Image (cartoon, rainbow, N blue to C red):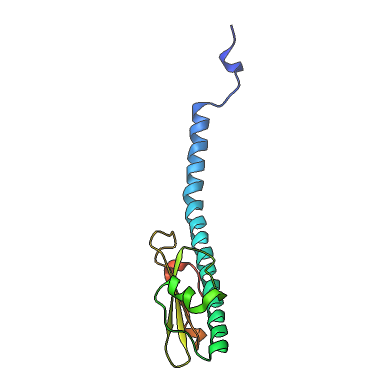
Length: 140
């Protein structure tokens, strides 16, 4: 007959303690990780806005005027032709031509995205007026 003490393995208490430690680590690490994911998506949207601004400047160089305003991503793509495509699908992009040689670009996170509530704006004349909402976890 074998002695119970000679058997190898973990006790139930040891397993419960390690599960509790793992749960505590996850509750601390997961929100920080999600915050970095949102910030990364917002930074990609910022890069998209800057690339879109360059595409609009390219259109202006060719046509001597900015294209008409566009209220959605498809309209923005149509306005700049093949010069720009968004790098991600989590944001909707809008373009407003002010008619005075300036424009405003906006990127809003889609509601089904984990960046929901994030809104970025880019002003062509006053870069100091560029904004990022609190939900973006980033700033200009």
